[in-house]
Amino acid sequence: MREWAFVLYPEGWPGTEESDRFDRSDALAGGEIGWEEDPGGVRFPCVVRAARAEDAVAWAVERLGRAGIGIADVRMPLTDFRTAAP
Image 1: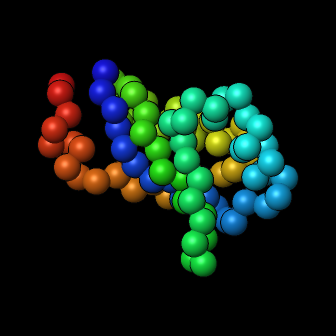
Image 2: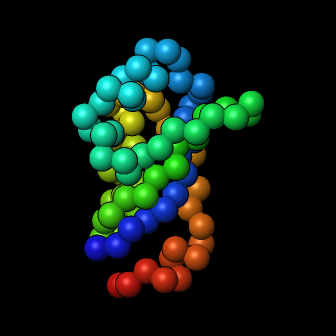
């Protein structure tokens, strides 16, 4: 197991309802998924512990899905893959 750092980008700007669900979600209370806004939109920086990058991303996407937030894009630094243990 290792920590994977990546950023999830939503399909659109989450509305008030999704924001409220995110803020009150027990599934998101662990701190693995953050919420950042700028004039260009919203992004969700994540640090998730998992055996594989795919597992970490799937876990975070599923948690955001519970809050009604669909994900359009995932970005992960390539350096994470070079340091990953098999």
